[in-house]
Length: 226
Image (cartoon, rainbow, N blue to C red; front, side):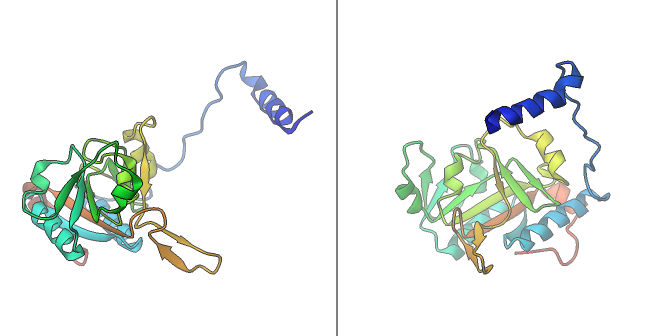
């Protein structure tokens, strides 16, 4: 009897008492840790993003184009990759040459791009994680893995959730999901950290919200990260 047959036999025996029906899935786990207001959840996201070495910025919708332009200028970006569905209002000022997200682009061509600007699908406060799902404002997965600098815009509070279970409820598992917790990094056996191994070395996250909402619920003191 092969190892495969042994394993399948154990599975069949474990399911024998269910009469062929699907075994119930236990879902009594915590959906979030503690109770927070919307503003506190956004602050937690900013704190955990920064802890993962992402650079966090806050802006209103009106300020967003200037913030993106400043981040590109500070980076010295000459070519920026822009998904087809990125809102035009996000990049209204003159700046670097804009490169379209094309299926025919090679890895070499993408490596010649200095920066990429995208939206996101959802952001998770408790883990400091940004999730992309290949939506129109995010483009293909590879455009956020090859260029060395990624600017990701998160709409606050609409795209912010407290926990991973809450994020999974919003995501389509059939889409190409990319989970990002800070810049790409790895460590060797001696724990020497190396960034930019399989993704961008620099991750700028812009938390943007409507002017009216910003006035109703201003960020907590000490978390205006930029």
